Length: 173
Image (tube, rainbow, N blue to C red; front, top):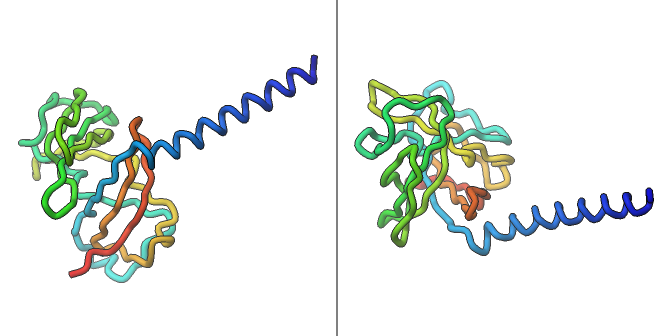
């Protein structure tokens, strides 16, 4: 009996590990690659400070302008947000529409990403949203970057809101 239970537990572990490997592979086979720009705000105190191994990046898509927002005006912190991104001629993805209600991509060059509502900035009239792919683990594997560098981040998105950071590079002037 104990032997059967042990074999069953090992089998369940193999199935779980196989499922995670399958999910990671699905990101690359059925996912969509998007390129995002980090915000170009400069901080004089962080001018020559290198990024740490685990970097938290601020993208241009973090601030959703009021005119692109179609959802409720009052939201709770960490509400799920749907953001429709559209690819421009330059190859980068920008906000096309955002809401707390489900949105679907209808055309080529469009993708929906999930975020979490942070707050509404009255001064700039922006809905601030956080995304899971803002944290880049081991950013030094892609190169040496500083806090004030504007970066191009390539993200591979899966069907079920999984993601993988494929590349990070500095914007060249």
